[in-house]
Image (cartoon, rainbow, N blue to C red):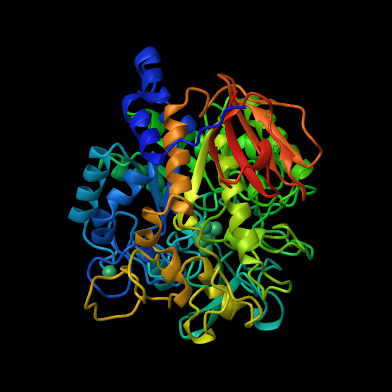
Length: 578
Ligand code: GLC
Ligand code: CA
């Protein structure tokens, strides 16, 4: 067996020379399908880079760090909401959908960012939040002022309460963040109607049965498409349509996941959402250059998810089934097969994701051997089992090679490329996620995966804010970040950053990666081995003993460079040329 481990630089050179498969497809067909195998970097703006020293990430910070994304080798960025917001839920409470939050910058800076990203070959995807607005949105303010029965209130879900004096909420729905999904307002100085909020009380749900809501959002899409934006990630895409009459749930334990056994859920994954997305697709298709949508839809089966991806609906969706699958070969194999089969039926590409700003970082999920990353990943309750961070990192390296070798698109959450872990010991007084308060201090919420990135240096703010910044980062960074800064990793060939760079460069350069052929190859029960055609094979060893590599293979890239006697160590992955 011959083996060579290519240097990242050599791989990058290859990437530079080869025209992307997507580009070639545009030439052939005239249709821009760049998104079918794109790697998208999720940029959580508050925590990426702070340009002006107030301790909060901003557009100036992104512009100064675009080189990191270019060197990493991603194809696009998805930026979490940057609109004016009181930040009751990290910007997912939008007060004005056609402007930029002053803390993050100006509309001129946003335009410059889009232009600079495009010049580097990076597409820009924004986050749109159609299920709810902020309670400071002019529509909600008008609704409060106009009173019961008014057309202003009809844009939201206002109802009289139940029980004597209307003192009880109109139904039994629960907020995803804890507690009832209803808050009562005062009408004419007296306790009045209640309004629905599936999330925080500062996030009233919009009424999508009202045509003005539909028109407004199509107009917002056009506003940003006109400014060159390449697409939108759709927040809570499965939540927009509510059942007529808002019937009781009947005691279902509420979370974001539409339960599979229930196709009549009163507010998750209702059939009516699809008509909305057909309208959105028509808007996107009226623009040149491949404008796209990616759905955040927490549905409990790949079949239900595929319904969002029919040819006249959305382009792609996050594959949360993969994210929630434990580190277990048969389970992963099943999830991969199921995902591939269901999207193929509707002609959409699969996507893969390991982490985002709502879930426990996968280094920490995979570092808990007792659960192997299983369990409801949205839960940030105090972790009950011991964490083996080294194991988590090791598996995260292997998981990255697995994900990036699968067909279709992939999402990298900022900090994945640095191997960041969930910061589980943030002091209670700094927690900002509304989940912490609304759960009565039982669930610490999602702040632990949102801690500002470490760029350089040996002490906070680790280059996140400029030298001499007047404020500390909005969440404190742990001292341990010193070992995982970009600066510390960039020249270390064994680092997570070097692994991601090499993998992404190879993914661009190798004709087998991206969309296309996928075939399982024979292997032990706890090993995943698959071919992608053109002599490319990926092996992932999830067993606790070394796994033999196929004969006559040369190693293109390995998560564990120590390949003794042609064997791959446990919790490692390799990309091979055969
Ligand atoms: C989505 C977002 C999450 C937010 C929620 C309400 O799940 O990813 O961060 O809290 O929607 O908008
Ligand atoms: Ca700032």
